[in-house]
Length: 291
Ligand SMILES: [Zn+2]
Image 1 (cartoon, protein in one colour):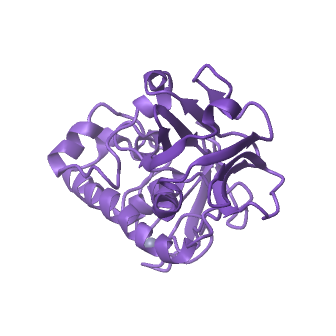
Image 2 (image 1 turned 60 degrees about the horizontal axis):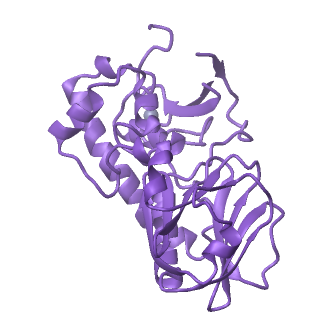
């Protein structure tokens, strides 16, 4: 692992991958608006992002079908299209959804456009085209490994403390990586992992098997409380602007160089494994090089 101390203002590489709280409010916003709507047209403006597992062209296959549900699993959004079709969206760092009237100017990064029968559009955009959108049948879902490998969802499938300990047990790496990988519990990415570890007062680079019983208890509480609380804030802040990722209310993530809201010490920003980690050295004590 390569580590680099970063200056607090170096926010260019800020990780904006949608995580469970972000996608939860997207889901809640879209549910009453697109479920029951019929797809009247589709456009794929750029190739390669859409992975079609259906075996017939997306354009002809999707038109005329009805959207029957919208769901979320971890960091994935699932649009169910009847009968027997779904779109599974993995937005990664620069992707997102936009809901707007057909006349709204297209963003340059718009990749997929679905027209529905009330004149509105659901658009997938992705500046760096790192995300994937799968168009699939129920049978072909098994080919989407990132859908299969996910642990219980951090918002919808709360584990007891004992169950949580069991889920963590097979993983021996640094706790932040264990949380973001999504196999122990799903839906946590770089931003909410920083927030959860700050709430739990745990140094992000602590190896999982070095956590004390009290650490795991605090972690369990924070894993379920922090994202759920964020959903309440995001519901108010995001509204119809589902294409915006609101992160400014977070306590430490993206706040390198600012004072810690608990103790006033300067929040640390460190780049490890090409992503920034923010934590408070005094609230989350630990030693980086003792490994
Ligand atoms: Zn602090």
